[in-house]
Length: 325
Image (cartoon, rainbow, N blue to C red):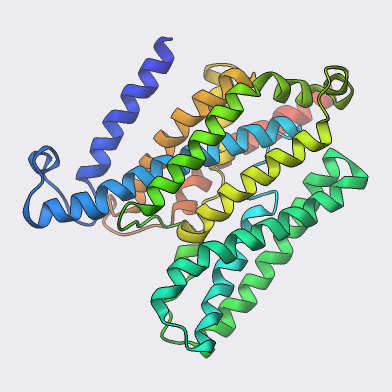
């Protein structure tokens, strides 16, 4: 219980720190009494951005935790599965609608739709690969799909800069950048996170059964293939939406579940709610660093990959050591 209270208190502290720090420093007094230019920046940009980063962290952390259990791979997350690469491809592809003389402002509304569609395409391909080969086929299929779409993104970006020089460079955004104006994205993210959290907690026993073996899940009247597919589709929807406005923020889905396993427990009933809370802490902390705490902006994935590297090395070394013994 005290660990949960500590994480919640940490969340609140980092939330207020993120409101103060950024490209524009906002005095703490204006945080509690917003007015003038500071008030506009706070209400329309800073608070929605910080809340969005917290919700993105929660969504990616829970998605990673569930995928690691269902696919029985401790290094899985929504990005390694190929879902994010497909979504990013769709988001970049949406800019080519400028060739049809559509207003540039329309891209902000069309991009999430195209990103979602291609995240579903990439996920469907991954599931089709894994349908005949099982859980590990899904893992390998996801890696292959991710590489294919990443290559296609590179081709699209190169041609985009040649064809539409008026489009700002997207390389920085593709490595993760959360900059939200208004509350639309925050509301949608909140709904998606609530769905993931509530369903994940409610279905935690079935997730644990499917993570042990398909035979055990079947013995309890749970169809592991349909159950796994339904979750991957829900995670694809969430990931596709996140990628459409924040780019590819990698490794959060790997970092957080492993920290929760070390601190709390590895069962889904504990992993899901604690990943929700810790994911927001990690993401808001990364956002503070990304948003100019060092004097310059840094892509979010550059920060999260540094955090994830020692955890991934530990998991790999531990797995090899256990296999050898």
